Length: 209
Ligand SMILES: C[S@@+](CC[C@H](N)C(=O)[O-])C[C@H]1O[C@@H](n2cnc3c(N)ncnc32)[C@H](O)[C@@H]1O
Ligand SMILES: Nc1nc2[nH]cc(C(=O)O)c2c(=O)[nH]1
Ligand code: SF4
Ligand SMILES: [Mg+2]
Image (cartoon, rainbow, N blue to C red; front, side, top):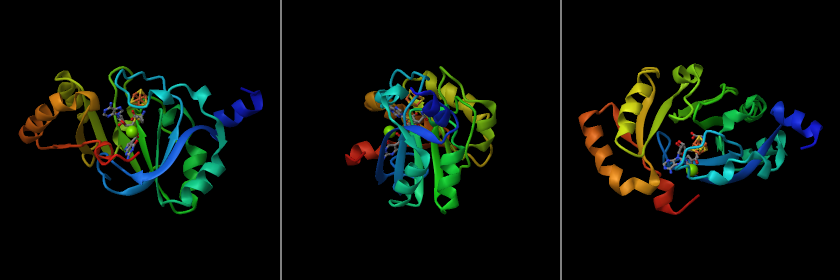
């Protein structure tokens, strides 16, 4: 990448944009709400079951002027969900300032593996064992969404729940490829431990992005 462009990306004035789409938030607390999704490329967390592996290599996604991302997104919705890839790979200050200055609500989907930048109205933290969240993000998370791939993930989820604030809403979400096996385990667990709620990837059932 050209040095001048690299500098703009480092400053969050450009971001490697993978895709953008207007859809229904499928997961977690805001499930069912129309929102515009901005998917930023780049992630080196490496979840083996990740459902957007095409996002990982930032070099495959064109550096895009952050102001252009903002202006475009605002035409679709006043709820903007920033996801990836891992959005916190990048400095989110410019993106969220731009969106909020025009009155939009900023939501982020993050593993929390990198320092928390940007100003967020809603933080969905989805911790990963292979690269744990930074300490600072736990207290600021509005929603904790733990993915269940096997039985050991319940114990991991509890240790993560120990670290978030009292107002944080707790979700267990089945890993998609093993949903038939783990949904009964999650249902049983939530009935026994009702501080947790179930989250499903409802957009995949609705056949929407
Ligand atoms: C693709 S990630 C991008 C944002 C960020 N890197 C993260 O992991 O939170 C968006 C959400 O999808 C979840 N996710 C990814 N692959 C999944 C799968 N195969 N089954 C269920 N949830 C999945 C992640 O845990 C995260 O909550
Ligand atoms: N509809 C819809 N809802 C989502 N919630 C979180 C998603 C994500 O990939 O971050 C996602 C997504 O990809 N599509
Ligand atoms: S952190 Fe998110 S984008 Fe990165 S590999 Fe894991 S699920 Fe995929
Ligand atoms: Mg998704």
